[in-house]
Image (cartoon, rainbow, N blue to C red; front, top):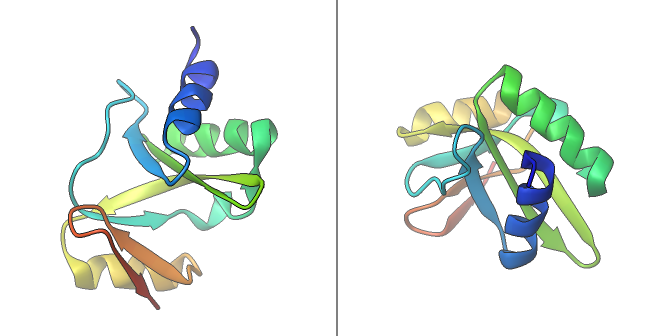
Length: 108
């Protein structure tokens, strides 16, 4: 199974959201997640391909979640400091950042 098919499978199994590394597709279990502005509004298979391409060139981390009938894909960055994550979120024009450990969505 190629990486695209495996990511689609992970998404199907985790419709409420997930974050994995592209190197081994293992879940990221701690830190603040900040989406890369280059992958805003990435939906469906085309969105997955774009988000994966950006992730492979940058952070090596990708995530997604389903909202209504659309599945959103993002290349993401992981920060272990809330202030740094907040700054990156603002720089990447995000409306929120997410803490994996506490399941906290911080609106910016």
